[in-house]
Length: 236
Image (tube, rainbow, N blue to C red; front, top):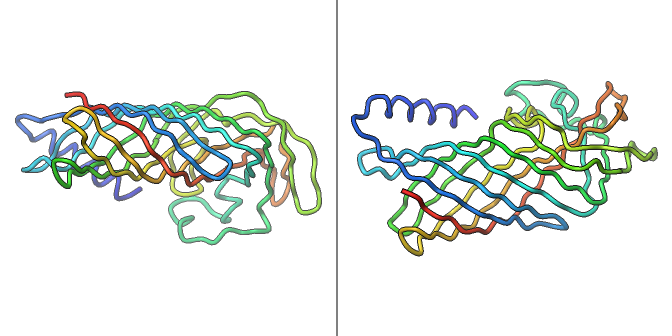
């Protein structure tokens, strides 16, 4: 998070001092594939080319992600429960297993529309690598029935996608957020194929505070690692 903030500030300084900035736009359609789960994502980014050779690109845009799965476990989400603290320090804290309950959702389906930032670097005329991540937005989807699990105790619950999404640090994240490490290959000056690793958080909020220990909680998160493949169109 600190690295992304630093890069973004450097980009702003560069753009404010530059006499002429070159920009490029990308639109992508991607599919994420995992174990009994998957996703479809549509994004659009407006990037600035930085540096003397303009190989570095930094920009912003929007992304729509639709996640679907089968029999997925959603675990206790708030950082203050998972690690006993909040703030940047959660990255270095171990999960407190005694505080983790879960909700088994048989057919989760979450849609998220988020603003996102993108960092890319052109290794050559044909290859570009990068990373992008959702920052803030909202989620929607139908309510789902699930099975709340706490040790040997289980009960039926109703849950819906957590409506507000915002990027934090680690378990400080709230809602459903998509991020992608990718490599792109330019078939032409316009059409590009890409592959990468998608790290996708989706989150459900139960209709009541089903978890009571160590305090009341209604937010549960699924962390998915998905293989991503897609196609990108470049717009000047």
